[in-house]
Amino acid sequence: MCMINQFVIVSGLSGSGKSTALNALEDLGFYAIDNLPIQLLEKLTQLFLAGPSDIQKIAIVMDLRDSAFVKHYPDAFRQVLRDFPKAEILYIEASDDALTRRFSETRRKHPLSTQSVAEGIVRERRLLRDLKDLVTTIIDSSDMTVHDLKQRINDQFSGTSPAGMQIQITSFGFKYGIPPNCDLLFDVRFLHNPHFVSELRDLTGLDKPIQNYILSDSRTAAFVDKTTEYLRFLIPEYANEGKSYLSIGIGCTGGKHRSVFLTEALAERLQDQPHRVTAHHQHLRFYSAKG
Image (tube, helix red, strand yellow):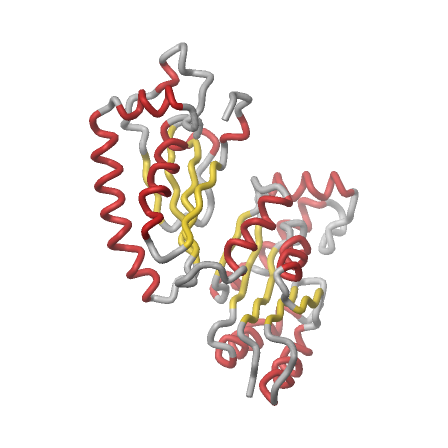
Protein backbone atom coordinates (compact mmCIF):
# COMPACT_ATOMS: atom_id res chain seq x y z
CA MET A 1 0.00 0.00 0.00
CA CYS A 2 1.35 3.45 -0.95
CA MET A 3 2.29 5.53 2.09
CA ILE A 4 2.90 8.81 0.22
CA ASN A 5 0.59 11.45 1.69
CA GLN A 6 2.14 14.54 0.07
CA PHE A 7 3.49 14.57 -3.47
CA VAL A 8 4.63 17.93 -4.89
CA ILE A 9 6.06 18.52 -8.35
CA VAL A 10 7.73 21.92 -8.67
CA SER A 11 8.19 23.46 -12.11
CA GLY A 12 8.24 26.88 -13.73
CA LEU A 13 10.58 29.50 -15.11
CA SER A 14 14.33 29.51 -14.69
CA GLY A 15 15.29 32.04 -12.03
CA SER A 16 11.83 32.10 -10.46
CA GLY A 17 12.89 30.34 -7.25
CA LYS A 18 12.35 26.63 -7.82
CA SER A 19 15.50 25.72 -5.89
CA THR A 20 14.44 27.93 -3.00
CA ALA A 21 11.04 26.25 -2.99
CA LEU A 22 12.61 22.78 -3.02
CA ASN A 23 14.89 23.69 -0.11
CA ALA A 24 11.89 24.97 1.84
CA LEU A 25 10.01 21.74 1.18
CA GLU A 26 13.03 19.72 2.28
CA ASP A 27 13.05 21.72 5.51
CA LEU A 28 9.42 20.65 5.98
CA GLY A 29 10.46 16.99 5.85
CA PHE A 30 9.93 16.27 2.15
CA TYR A 31 12.27 13.89 0.38
CA ALA A 32 13.63 16.32 -2.22
CA ILE A 33 14.82 15.52 -5.75
CA ASP A 34 16.11 18.20 -8.15
CA ASN A 35 16.05 17.93 -11.94
CA LEU A 36 14.50 14.47 -12.20
CA PRO A 37 14.31 13.41 -15.87
CA ILE A 38 10.68 13.27 -16.93
CA GLN A 39 11.07 9.74 -18.28
CA LEU A 40 12.01 8.51 -14.80
CA LEU A 41 8.90 9.93 -13.15
CA GLU A 42 6.73 6.94 -14.05
CA LYS A 43 9.29 4.47 -12.67
CA LEU A 44 9.55 6.47 -9.46
CA THR A 45 5.81 6.60 -8.92
CA GLN A 46 5.52 2.87 -9.62
CA LEU A 47 8.00 2.21 -6.82
CA PHE A 48 5.86 4.17 -4.38
CA LEU A 49 2.66 2.50 -5.54
CA ALA A 50 4.18 -0.97 -5.28
CA GLY A 51 4.40 -1.14 -1.51
CA PRO A 52 5.29 0.46 1.83
CA SER A 53 8.09 2.98 2.00
CA ASP A 54 9.74 5.09 4.68
CA ILE A 55 9.14 8.12 2.47
CA GLN A 56 5.80 9.82 3.18
CA LYS A 57 6.38 13.22 1.56
CA ILE A 58 8.19 13.80 -1.70
CA ALA A 59 8.99 16.96 -3.67
CA ILE A 60 10.51 16.94 -7.15
CA VAL A 61 11.74 19.78 -9.35
CA MET A 62 11.25 19.11 -13.06
CA ASP A 63 11.79 21.65 -15.80
CA LEU A 64 13.34 22.45 -19.16
CA ARG A 65 16.84 21.47 -18.10
CA ASP A 66 15.61 18.05 -19.24
CA SER A 67 15.37 18.17 -23.03
CA ALA A 68 12.53 15.62 -23.04
CA PHE A 69 10.42 17.57 -20.54
CA VAL A 70 8.17 19.47 -22.97
CA LYS A 71 7.28 16.38 -24.98
CA HIS A 72 6.41 14.12 -22.06
CA TYR A 73 5.16 16.25 -19.15
CA PRO A 74 1.45 16.37 -20.17
CA ASP A 75 0.94 12.61 -19.97
CA ALA A 76 3.36 12.14 -17.07
CA PHE A 77 1.80 14.85 -14.88
CA ARG A 78 -1.77 13.71 -15.60
CA GLN A 79 -0.79 10.19 -14.55
CA VAL A 80 0.64 11.49 -11.26
CA LEU A 81 -2.59 13.38 -10.56
CA ARG A 82 -4.55 10.18 -11.20
CA ASP A 83 -2.30 7.97 -9.08
CA PHE A 84 -1.98 10.42 -6.18
CA PRO A 85 -5.28 12.27 -5.63
CA LYS A 86 -3.64 14.76 -3.25
CA ALA A 87 -0.68 15.48 -5.52
CA GLU A 88 0.19 19.11 -6.18
CA ILE A 89 1.86 20.59 -9.24
CA LEU A 90 3.40 23.91 -8.25
CA TYR A 91 4.36 26.40 -10.96
CA ILE A 92 6.65 29.28 -10.00
CA GLU A 93 6.97 32.29 -12.27
CA ALA A 94 8.19 35.90 -12.16
CA SER A 95 8.13 38.99 -14.33
CA ASP A 96 10.66 39.49 -17.12
CA ASP A 97 12.26 42.35 -15.18
CA ALA A 98 12.64 40.25 -12.03
CA LEU A 99 14.12 37.30 -13.93
CA THR A 100 16.53 39.51 -15.86
CA ARG A 101 17.68 41.17 -12.64
CA ARG A 102 18.26 37.83 -10.93
CA PHE A 103 20.32 36.44 -13.80
CA SER A 104 22.33 39.66 -13.84
CA GLU A 105 22.97 39.49 -10.09
CA THR A 106 24.08 35.85 -10.16
CA ARG A 107 25.92 36.23 -13.50
CA ARG A 108 24.49 32.93 -14.63
CA LYS A 109 23.47 32.09 -18.18
CA HIS A 110 19.82 31.40 -18.90
CA PRO A 111 19.60 27.70 -19.85
CA LEU A 112 17.68 28.45 -23.05
CA SER A 113 19.54 31.54 -24.22
CA THR A 114 21.97 31.66 -27.10
CA GLN A 115 22.40 35.43 -27.21
CA SER A 116 20.65 37.11 -24.25
CA VAL A 117 18.72 36.41 -21.07
CA ALA A 118 15.66 38.13 -22.56
CA GLU A 119 15.71 35.73 -25.50
CA GLY A 120 15.85 32.74 -23.14
CA ILE A 121 12.95 34.04 -21.05
CA VAL A 122 10.73 34.52 -24.08
CA ARG A 123 11.53 31.06 -25.37
CA GLU A 124 10.93 29.39 -22.01
CA ARG A 125 7.57 31.14 -21.52
CA ARG A 126 6.47 29.89 -24.92
CA LEU A 127 7.53 26.30 -24.25
CA LEU A 128 5.83 26.20 -20.83
CA ARG A 129 2.66 28.03 -21.89
CA ASP A 130 0.42 24.94 -21.75
CA LEU A 131 1.86 23.67 -18.46
CA LYS A 132 -0.31 26.14 -16.51
CA ASP A 133 -3.40 24.18 -17.55
CA LEU A 134 -2.20 21.25 -15.40
CA VAL A 135 -0.86 23.00 -12.31
CA THR A 136 -2.72 23.16 -9.00
CA THR A 137 -0.91 26.23 -7.63
CA ILE A 138 0.86 29.20 -9.24
CA ILE A 139 3.23 31.43 -7.27
CA ASP A 140 4.54 34.67 -8.73
CA SER A 141 7.82 35.44 -6.98
CA SER A 142 8.50 38.77 -8.73
CA ASP A 143 8.18 40.88 -5.59
CA MET A 144 9.28 38.20 -3.14
CA THR A 145 12.55 37.91 -1.30
CA VAL A 146 14.00 34.45 -0.72
CA HIS A 147 12.53 34.59 2.77
CA ASP A 148 9.10 35.58 1.43
CA LEU A 149 9.06 32.60 -0.93
CA LYS A 150 10.14 30.20 1.80
CA GLN A 151 7.36 31.50 4.03
CA ARG A 152 4.82 31.13 1.21
CA ILE A 153 5.89 27.50 0.70
CA ASN A 154 5.75 26.87 4.43
CA ASP A 155 2.26 28.39 4.66
CA GLN A 156 0.93 26.13 1.93
CA PHE A 157 2.71 22.84 2.55
CA SER A 158 3.42 22.68 6.27
CA GLY A 159 0.08 20.99 6.90
CA THR A 160 -0.70 23.30 9.83
CA SER A 161 -4.04 24.46 8.49
CA PRO A 162 -6.88 22.36 10.00
CA ALA A 163 -8.94 22.27 6.81
CA GLY A 164 -6.04 22.29 4.36
CA MET A 165 -6.81 25.62 2.68
CA GLN A 166 -4.50 28.61 3.03
CA ILE A 167 -6.06 32.06 2.69
CA GLN A 168 -3.75 34.99 1.98
CA ILE A 169 -5.09 38.54 1.93
CA THR A 170 -2.70 40.91 0.17
CA SER A 171 -2.69 44.70 0.16
CA PHE A 172 -1.30 46.42 -2.92
CA GLY A 173 -1.19 49.71 -4.80
CA PHE A 174 -2.80 49.97 -8.23
CA LYS A 175 -0.03 52.40 -9.25
CA TYR A 176 2.44 49.50 -8.95
CA GLY A 177 0.24 46.85 -10.54
CA ILE A 178 -2.20 44.17 -9.45
CA PRO A 179 -0.65 41.08 -7.81
CA PRO A 180 -0.78 38.14 -10.22
CA ASN A 181 -3.05 35.16 -9.66
CA CYS A 182 -5.50 36.81 -7.29
CA ASP A 183 -8.69 34.76 -6.99
CA LEU A 184 -10.66 37.73 -5.63
CA LEU A 185 -9.93 41.44 -5.95
CA PHE A 186 -11.39 44.39 -4.03
CA ASP A 187 -10.80 48.06 -4.88
CA VAL A 188 -10.99 50.36 -1.83
CA ARG A 189 -10.04 53.61 -3.56
CA PHE A 190 -13.57 54.90 -2.95
CA LEU A 191 -12.70 55.54 0.71
CA HIS A 192 -11.22 58.86 1.88
CA ASN A 193 -7.47 58.91 1.19
CA PRO A 194 -5.11 59.77 4.10
CA HIS A 195 -2.48 60.77 1.56
CA PHE A 196 -4.13 64.17 1.24
CA VAL A 197 -3.81 64.90 4.95
CA SER A 198 -0.29 66.25 5.41
CA GLU A 199 0.24 65.00 8.97
CA LEU A 200 -0.88 61.48 7.98
CA ARG A 201 0.86 61.11 4.63
CA ASP A 202 4.08 59.56 5.93
CA LEU A 203 2.32 56.99 8.13
CA THR A 204 1.01 53.61 6.98
CA GLY A 205 -2.13 51.58 7.49
CA LEU A 206 -0.43 49.87 10.42
CA ASP A 207 -0.37 53.14 12.38
CA LYS A 208 -3.23 54.06 14.72
CA PRO A 209 -3.81 57.63 13.39
CA ILE A 210 -4.31 56.20 9.87
CA GLN A 211 -6.68 53.54 11.17
CA ASN A 212 -8.74 56.12 13.03
CA TYR A 213 -8.91 58.33 9.94
CA ILE A 214 -10.08 55.48 7.70
CA LEU A 215 -12.65 54.38 10.28
CA SER A 216 -14.02 57.92 10.41
CA ASP A 217 -15.34 57.32 6.89
CA SER A 218 -18.75 55.78 7.57
CA ARG A 219 -18.40 53.52 4.51
CA THR A 220 -15.41 51.70 6.00
CA ALA A 221 -17.38 49.71 8.57
CA ALA A 222 -20.00 48.83 5.96
CA PHE A 223 -17.30 47.61 3.57
CA VAL A 224 -15.66 45.42 6.21
CA ASP A 225 -18.99 43.97 7.35
CA LYS A 226 -20.33 43.22 3.88
CA THR A 227 -17.01 41.89 2.55
CA THR A 228 -16.58 39.65 5.58
CA GLU A 229 -20.10 38.28 5.07
CA TYR A 230 -19.36 37.68 1.38
CA LEU A 231 -16.09 35.88 2.14
CA ARG A 232 -17.66 33.75 4.85
CA PHE A 233 -20.09 32.53 2.22
CA LEU A 234 -17.43 31.90 -0.44
CA ILE A 235 -14.67 30.30 1.62
CA PRO A 236 -16.55 27.08 2.50
CA GLU A 237 -17.62 26.73 -1.13
CA TYR A 238 -14.02 26.99 -2.33
CA ALA A 239 -12.93 24.52 0.35
CA ASN A 240 -15.63 22.04 -0.69
CA GLU A 241 -14.39 22.35 -4.26
CA GLY A 242 -10.97 21.16 -3.06
CA LYS A 243 -9.17 24.47 -3.44
CA SER A 244 -5.97 24.46 -1.38
CA TYR A 245 -5.02 28.13 -1.63
CA LEU A 246 -7.15 31.28 -1.86
CA SER A 247 -5.54 34.62 -2.74
CA ILE A 248 -7.49 37.82 -2.02
CA GLY A 249 -6.22 41.23 -3.16
CA ILE A 250 -7.18 44.53 -1.50
CA GLY A 251 -6.05 47.53 -3.53
CA CYS A 252 -5.81 51.27 -3.01
CA THR A 253 -3.81 53.85 -4.94
CA GLY A 254 -0.37 53.33 -3.44
CA GLY A 255 -0.71 50.25 -1.24
CA LYS A 256 0.28 52.24 1.84
CA HIS A 257 -2.81 53.34 3.77
CA ARG A 258 -6.33 52.09 3.05
CA SER A 259 -5.51 48.68 1.58
CA VAL A 260 -3.03 47.92 4.38
CA PHE A 261 -5.51 48.72 7.14
CA LEU A 262 -8.39 46.84 5.49
CA THR A 263 -6.22 43.79 4.78
CA GLU A 264 -5.40 43.60 8.48
CA ALA A 265 -9.05 44.19 9.45
CA LEU A 266 -10.39 41.47 7.15
CA ALA A 267 -7.70 38.98 8.18
CA GLU A 268 -8.64 39.55 11.82
CA ARG A 269 -12.35 39.15 11.08
CA LEU A 270 -11.76 35.86 9.26
CA GLN A 271 -9.74 34.22 12.02
CA ASP A 272 -12.92 32.38 13.03
CA GLN A 273 -12.68 30.32 9.82
CA PRO A 274 -11.34 26.73 10.03
CA HIS A 275 -8.48 27.71 7.71
CA ARG A 276 -5.20 29.54 8.10
CA VAL A 277 -5.60 33.23 7.23
CA THR A 278 -2.52 35.43 6.72
CA ALA A 279 -2.06 39.10 5.80
CA HIS A 280 0.63 40.23 3.36
CA HIS A 281 1.50 43.75 2.19
CA GLN A 282 2.83 43.65 -1.35
CA HIS A 283 4.01 47.24 -1.74
CA LEU A 284 4.45 48.52 1.80
CA ARG A 285 8.21 47.96 1.60
CA PHE A 286 8.40 50.75 -0.99
CA TYR A 287 7.83 53.24 1.80
CA SER A 288 10.27 54.18 4.52
CA ALA A 289 7.64 55.16 7.07
CA LYS A 290 7.46 53.34 10.35
CA GLY A 291 5.31 50.21 10.72
